[in-house]
Every structure is written in structure tokens, then in C-alpha cells.
Amino acid sequence: MPYVVVAYDISDNNVRTMASEKLKSMGFSRIQRSLYARKGGASEAKEAARALARIIDFKTDNVMVMVVPWESLEKAWKLGVFNYEGSIVEYAVL
Image (tube, rainbow, N blue to C red; front, side):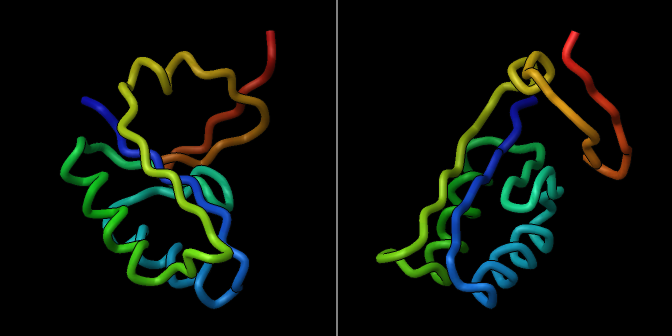
């Protein structure tokens, strides 16, 4: 099952909070402060992009929405502590 990954750089605190709340309401889990993921494919990615497009300022903000195979996330190098889908996992470089 692929995942939809959303990363953003939003300058306004209020807009950033609205984006975070919108993604959470759509079933996304927060990976880092401006990085979210959920299971899904192209239709969920398009839905997230459309939702964020309604609230960001295209002159100052940027958003990237990607569909990523689970295997790619699983093989990613992770450093530190991650809270994903309700489970806290610690990672370290080998």
C-alpha cells in the first residue's frame, strides 16, 4: 500500500496551524513539524493538495505532496524518535 507524504514550508503561524489541522482531519499523522503521512494513493494526494491550495499563500508558501511506496519509507534512513500512527519508534544510524 502506498503512502501520501506531505511536506510544507508555510510562513504564517495561523495558516500553518490551519494546514496542520486540515491534514490531521484528513487522516494524516504528523511525522515532524511540517511533514505528514497517511496510507493512500493518487486520489488522496490530489485531495490533500487541493485542500492546502485553498489556504496557503502562493507568494510565500510551498507545499509538496508525494505518493511514496511503503518500501521506500521503510528503507529510509531515520534518526531520532518518531511518533507515527500512534507508536513511538526510536531509530539510530548503524
